[in-house]
Image 1 (cartoon, one colour):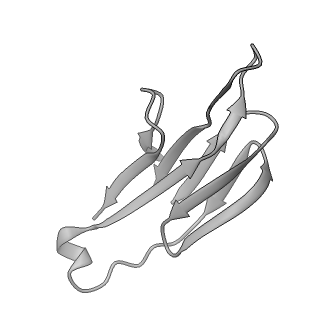
Image 2: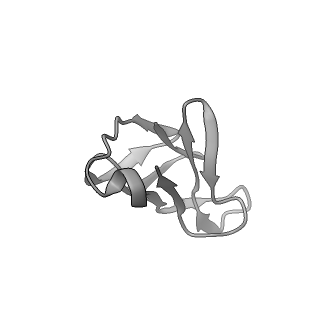
Length: 92
C-alpha cells in the first residue's frame, strides 16, 4: 500500500496504517510504502487506513488542504479531491 500527498512546499502529515505516525515539515510530493498485516477480527471487519495532510500553499497564495491518496495493489482506493480534509480506506 502506498500513502501519498502531492503539492509543492512543505507540510505536516499524520497517518494510520501499519502503525500510527506523523512527519513534520515534509517536502512535497511525499509517499510512504507500508505493509499492513490484518489479524484476527481485522480480517472480517477490516482496518481503517488514513492520511491527514496539513495545509499547503495554493498557486494563488491561499493555504488549502494538501491533496492525498491511498493506493492498494496499484489501484487508487481513496483520495480527497472532493474537498475532504483526509483520505480514508477500510482495508479488508
